[in-house]
Amino acid sequence: MLKRVLRWTAIALFVLLLAAAGFVFAQVSAFDASLAKVYDVPPPAIAASTDPAVLERGKHLAESLGGCQACHGNDLGGEPGEAMGPIGVLPAPNLTRGKGGIGARYSDGQLARLIRSGIKADGRSVRFMPSQDFHWWPEPDLVAIVSYMRSVPNVDRIMPDGHVGVLGKVLDRMGKFTLDVARRIDHEAPPPKVPAPAPTAAYGKYLAKLCQGCHGEGLSGGKIPGAPTELPIPTNITPHQTGIKRYTEADFMKLLDTGIKPDGKKLDPFMPIEALTAMNEVEKKALWAYLSTLPPKPFGGR
Image (tube, rainbow, N blue to C red):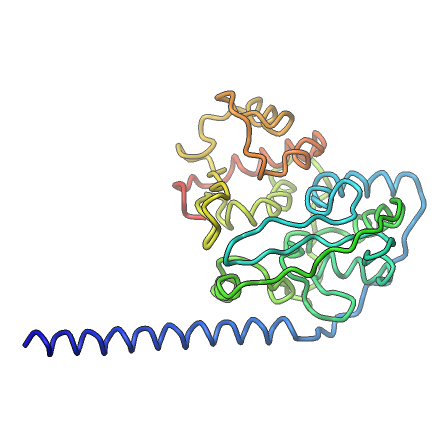
């Protein structure tokens, strides 16, 4: 009797393992096929400007909302990226026209398409870069940030290609972690009608898209699926008792201005603190206005 039970248990485990292997193989194959897809999305017809006001706006976007410097370095010459265990490692490329930089290979329109649509010069999807969070940017902002990228000094720095691990591919296909970026964007939809920058919840709703990559679509935080244990767990930024319910607007402004929480503790360095502090007053107030209107959600719902 015991031998029969053990035999059937072994058979059941084998079938489960076989099914799991088949599932993983299917997800990895789908990821690879999607990343190889060439998108028929023409680059926007824009040209870089040398107007000081445009360059200043581009510099602001690169330092704050775009997070360009947080990922690609203060010189935009690229960074090695965080090792994310079995998810993979994805270096941030050199954006300048120097040796190893993509700036020399991309037209102004192709750079704008990369930012807005997550599509590289060869028509394929970029990996990991959160273009889905920038897709709402109006054309003047695209012109501004491309113009600023063209204005920075060339950096000679060749970055490695990096890789996406099996777990990263599976999590992407399951919608748990975005690595195949262009697939997440509706390229046929017209750009959304974004309200003018103002300290309102309506404008803050768009700014908060930049928070979703870490804090989740619901902004309630929780462990990033598949992330190594050394990565910090994103917090809840909804007005729940496990989130920012006890924050005042002054507390929130101090957090963004200094990186210090109401309890006196500093934000984890994993947070893009420099990008947060570089936001202007209108953007900070708009983000607070929007987060304050969210339904409270318990921590961990992401």
